[in-house]
Length: 82
Image 1 (cartoon, rainbow, N blue to C red):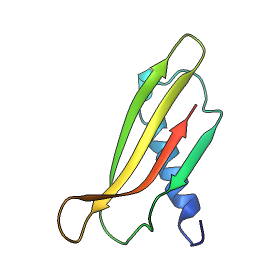
Image 2: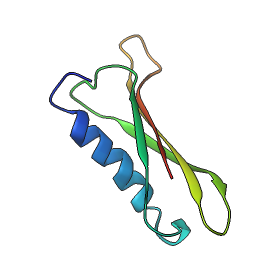
Image 3: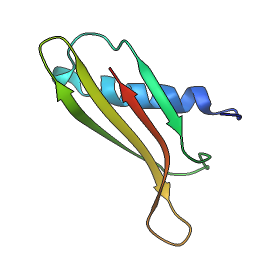
Image 4: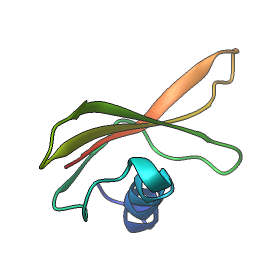
């Protein structure tokens, strides 16, 4: 990703998982971020979901969207945290 916001966007994804509180098992080991589109100035929404959990690992999916110009939402980033 070329641009000044890659690190901030990745940190936002990780913070979204860490904010899940009691559902978090252990410390994050791997963060994989896919930058789907440029992040624009303005509002964004972060959706965090626990995809799979067992006694030793959890797999989290994070999706960042922004309002689209013509209505709806644009996906700008998706990430997996283990």
